[in-house]
Image (cartoon, rainbow, N blue to C red):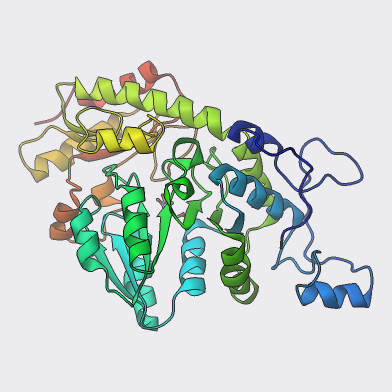
Length: 408
Ligand SMILES: *Cc1c(COP(=O)(O)O)cnc(C)c1O
C-alpha cells in the first residue's frame, strides 16, 4: 500500500523530509497531519473495491491492511532511512517477527550477534526454533566469528544491532553486509540506538533496517511502535502479506504520535548525544567509577569505527561500572547509586527526553545465569544511563549523590 504522497521536490535534506514527508493533505488543508481513526473505508464502486482488494489499484480497504496516518509515518521513516519503502508494526518485536515470517522458512539459518536485545535473542533463538528456523549467535565485534557461523546455502539472514545495549559495542555494518551478500544472504540492522539521524545502514549496504519506534522515534516515551525499511519489492511481496494474515498492525494513534516525534528527531538526537558525551567525560573522571562504555569516548574499543559509522556521534546511551572489589559489593554500590537519585528515572526504557537509569544485571539481563551474564560482560556494578534532555550538571549531581557516598 503506497497511497498518494505529498508533492515534494526530490533531493530534500533529511531534516526537511522529517517534517514534510507524508500522505497528501485532505480537502481541508490541515497543516498538522490528520489522525484517521477508522477501521473501514467506503469504496467508490464494487469494481473499484475488487481492484483494491486484488492489489491492482491504490486505495484503502481495511484497517489491518493500511491507514493514511500509518502510511504517513511509513513514508517519512523510509525517506529518513533512504529506503524505497517501509512497513510499520505494533512494536519493535513484531517488526522482527514480521521480518522473520516474511523471509524465512523451516531449515533456514540466521546469524545474529550474541549482544542483541534480549527479546530478539529469545524470539530468534527459541520461539522461531520451534518452527525449524536455525540460528547462531556470535560475538558482536568479531568479524571472523560471523564468517565462521555462515552456512553457505542455508544462511538467509545476518542480523545486527549497533551500538548494542547496554555495553554499546559497535559492529562494522558495511563489512557484515558484504559478508551476507557474498553468501546470498540478506543483511538486517536494528537501528534503534543510532536512528537515521546518526546512522543510515541502507547506505552501507544493509537490505533491511528495523526499528523500535517506541524509543527515539517517539522520543517522549508514550507509545509502542515498530517498522521495517526495505526495497518496495520486499515490502510488498514479503512483509505486506504477513501484515495481512498475522495483523501486527500499528494503531493509527500510535502512528500519529511517532510521526510527530520524527519531526524533532534530528535536534533531539544531536542534543542528547552531546549531553551523553559530556556525562561520559564526567563519569570517566569520577573516582567512584570504573569503566565507562560510550562509543564517543576515545577509550571505547571501537571508537574510530563508531565515529565513521555514526556521523561522529556516540549516541545517547552509555553505561558505567561502579568501582568495587567483588560482585557483591558492586551490586550493593550500584543499588546505592540508583536509590540515592532524587529525580532521575529508575526505569528500563530508553529514547525519552527524561534521563533513565537502570541496573541491567537485575532487570533486562536478569533472566540470564551468572555465567551468561559474565560472557555478556554485564557485571553487577553496571549502570545504564539513557541520557535525556535535562542539563548535564543536574544529571551529574543526581548521580553524584550516590557515587560520592559509596557504601563499603
Ligand atoms: C526496545 C528494543 C527493541 C524492541 O522494541 P519494542 O518496541 O519494545 O517491541 C528491539 N531492539 C532494541 C535495540 C530495543 O532497544
